Image (cartoon, rainbow, N blue to C red; front, top):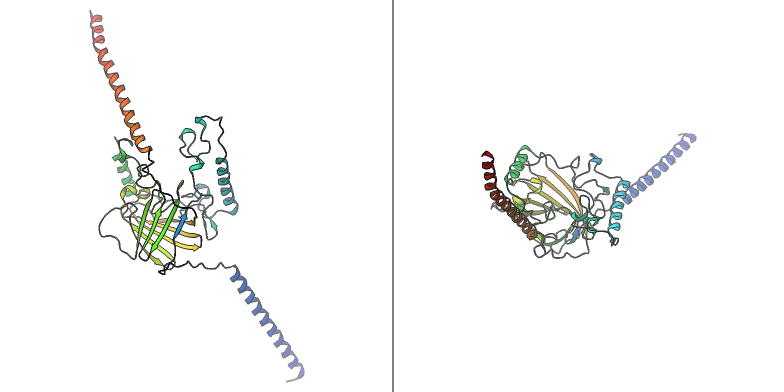
Length: 377
């Protein structure tokens, strides 16, 4: 081997070595950068019996609507600007509602800061009573347009069978007024269950009282729902009851899949039917603690007898330092006896009016007959 070839080989070796070192350094730097950007996987704390700890007080209050507004079409995620505008609008609404009432306004003018759909004397709750949240739902950094996660953000259409059930149910109310008796009023007005679906399944946010307390034992998870002091009991590792008993909030069993509590519920009471669901509906809920102050709540509804497709949604339950107060519904339920008493008063007034009209007609009949006879003569 001559001297020049040896020099060239040594030079090439140095270049290759330097290139290799540079590539190694670059790759190491890239790996380090990727590791720095990747969020750390959160591991939920454990209870003394080894289960992921979901215990504490939580709230699912949010300004994100249940179904997606048409303006967003098939778009699941809001832009940062859109989310900011929605949250600012809510903040402005709350600020306006907290201002002192103008003493010059009359009862027909108040309250002026009602939620959409209510105004004047028809507004039962002004901003003082409302706690609908201040933020949109954020899942994995995405600001959501709706809680429902179907492609269009809407509940799937009802099946023909479900439409028939709904028609028959409505026909059953014909001839009966909604105030004929307490059975004609909603479960919420009767203080039997929350209005909407606060207790679930699925557990969804409402106008107020969107608070929950979770307590765990080795074989049971208890979820205390603020409205209306409902308590869900989930049997861990259990089986569904062989008795065909339709319970309020259904029959719930659960198991753990890693850090996720999976709840399966069947046999809801027909009076509590969620969105017209049938007696064969199955609800699956998944609760995963994804941060020290947050639980991811997901649900799916499988009911081929009612919906044209299975569907579901997701939102967050955020840690709350506020206590849960007793929801003394019956003790303060002046509305229901007032509604029924008002209906009975209307019936009484209508009956008295009908009787007076009948008496007037009866008294006028002989006179009319005598007049007719006189004309004939």
